[in-house]
Length: 211
Ligand code: MD6
Ligand code: FE
Image (tube, rainbow, N blue to C red; front, side, top):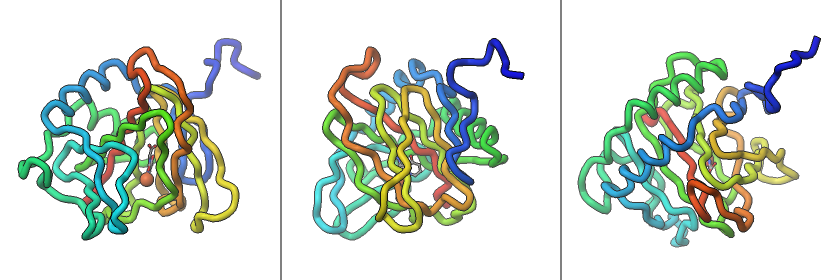
């Protein structure tokens, strides 16, 4: 029998084997205040691709390792090339959130050592790619969406064809692992809009086990 008091959106939505959406799993207010403090210590910047293009999404990191892109390639680094210092520590609340989300999706024991902080302005997106720089692809990636909504494009093991489209709203957590861990994916250009907490921006945290 259907639960009379079921929430409007389900607590767990299996998108495909290995990809699990946890709608409104994260409380965004506290996370955004933490992000603000992290970005004061370690500012957002537009990195350059190995092909020499400027990445539209502004990025920073926290945790033991940070993901960086430069003309010499993509990699994880213990030091921020901008400051020469280690990245800010990953807040305990972030670790716990990532661990709990992964567990909820069936990946127990996830202990992220890297958190990439992405900021999208309206009109910007992320072109299809695969996340290949982590040592052990058996761990999932836990992705937290904050602020303005976006449309996530999920392909298969090739970037062609029409992607599965997943709307990601403020507080939604997407766990990305298992047989889908190496799938191509991207983010559509953000539609114009304003969010009460982030104005014209979407933030995204991706928690990874880099090493
Ligand atoms: C984003 N996310 O949602 C970009 N990658 O803004 C990603 O590129 C991503 O969400 C790997 C796993 C989950 C993700
Ligand atoms: Fe990705």
